[in-house]
Length: 234
Image (cartoon, rainbow, N blue to C red; front, side, top):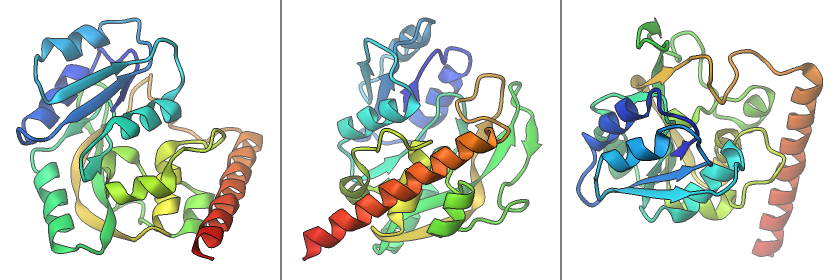
């Protein structure tokens, strides 16, 4: 989890995660130089499963998630946002799929959308927007929402370090996962994804020029990745 000035919803999110993970699990939180009560809220849980790391200066969400991934030690890694709510069966459903499908390297679940007050705005993403895992479709429009993703640790060797000019970490992980294993879907909402006035991911499209720059960055970095992979195999 990457946090930044998340005091408004963080306690509810951490409670929803801690209630369903085991004593040997960890929650890695990297805080991106928050200036509100985020740190005190995390420390207030007094839970040994929570590992908090502080960045002295703000580095942005992509770099902060990279730092969190580098600190993680588990075999199965879940991405979590600071303002959502995990449903009570999220971890058990995802772990069951990984257990029964050893060839699957990344799992994407459906999710519901809620507003700042916790009211349901959309019951299911997959019912209104079909999920397409392919690279081309993701380059055109991001198919991967980090809060609904979990993956095997092995993917990190392909994804990290994140290129500095990619639009979002989840989009890059989703694209690279196509070359690192298989993607599986859980057609059941396992997260309440919260939309509010301070989301890191915008509710509307960026300006066209910015979108073109981001797509060019993704294509360029994907080409470099494939070239490196080919060299390593040769």
